[in-house]
Length: 467
Image 1 (cartoon, helix red, strand yellow):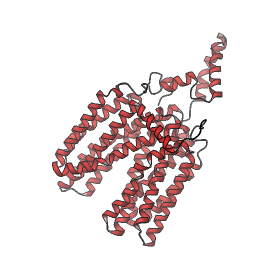
Image 2: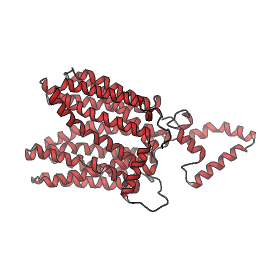
Image 3: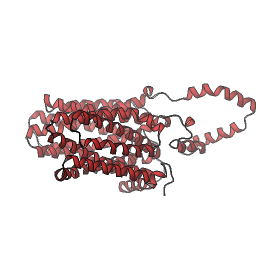
Image 4: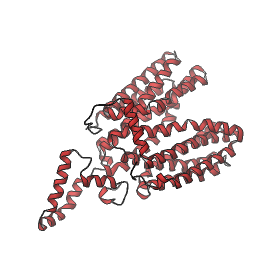
C-alpha cells in the first residue's frame, strides 16, 4: 500500500490520517508531542520554514520504513507461521490416511478428520477473545510447542503399531485447537511488526504463504505416509519446533498495552466481539457474501468430482483440477496488493462474485480435467485477490484490542459455511445430476452478486458510520 501521505484520497487510509492529525490512538505523551509540534510549526519564522522545507526530502527518506524483505521481525513472524501452516497441512492429510491404512475403516478415518476440523467451529470465538486478552507471542509459542508434542506422541503411537482410535481422536482435536489459536494470534500480531502503509503488502505475503502451504502440504503429507505412517508427524514436530525458534527471534510486543478496567468474563468479551461485528455494516455484508460463495464452491468441487467420475475420469484428474485451483490462488494472492490499490473494496466484492458466476457456467458442460483446471485456476486467482483485500480491510477497521475476535468471527463464518456445501450438493447431485446442479450453483452465485450490487450496506462504503 502507498504511504498515507500519498494516498489522502483513498478511503481506506483516511481514518488513520485523520487520527494522526487529531493525535488520536496515541499514548498521551506521544499525542501531546504531536500536537506541540504542530503548534511550533505554525509559529516558525519564514526563513526557518524555508530551510526546513529544503531539508525535508532527506529527513523523509531517512524516516521511511524498511522494505518488508528487510524487516527482521516480519520475516521471522512470516516464516514461523509458514512452517506451522505447512506442518498443519501435512498432518491434515496424514491423519485420515494413516488411520485408513492402519484400520481399513473409512468411518474411523472420517472421524479423525472431523476431530481435526471441529476446532474451526467450536474454538474460534473463545480463541479470538483469548488472543485479545493474553500475550500473543506466548500464545504462539505455547501453541507451537504443544503441536510439536502432539505430533511426536502420534508418531510414537504409530511406530509402536498400536493404533488407538480414541487417542488419535484426542490428538487430532488438540492439534486443531492449538492450530486455531496460533493462526488467530499471528493474524492479530502482523500490524505490530509492520507500519500501516505496508499492511497491504504484508497481507499479500501472508495470503501467498497460506496458499503455498496448502499446495505443498497436501502432497508432502500424503507422500510421507507412503514411506511410513509416522513420518509426516515426525516432520510436523520438526517444523513446529523450527517455527517456535523463529518466534523467539521476534522483538518487541505483538499487541498494545491493555489499560484500565477490570478484566471481564470470557463470555462477555465474546459477546462484545459479536456486538462490534454486528455494527460494522459493510463488513457484515462482505462476510455474508463470503459465506454464500464458500458454500457454493464446496458444492461445485463435489459436483466436478462427480462429473469427472461419471465421464470415466480418475482421482488423478480430480487432483489436477484442485491443484490448478490452488496455483491460481497463489498467483492471485501475490497480485492482490495491486488490485486493492486500484479498486475499492466494494468493486472487488461485486466484481469477484460476478466473475465467479460467469466461470461456473462452462464447468457445467466441460469434463476435460485440463480445461476445468484452467477455469478453476481463474476462480482461485479471484479468491486469492479477494482474501488479500478482505484481510487488509479487516486489519484496518478492527482496533488492536478487538483484532483477535474480528479474525475469529471472519474465520468462523467462512469456515463454518464450507461444511454446508457438500451436504447440499450431494442431495442435488443425486436428484439433478452434475450438469443441472452446477448450473443451479452458477445461478445462485449470480444472485449473490446481484444482492451485493444493490446492498445498502455495500453502497454506504467500508468506512460509513456504524449504528
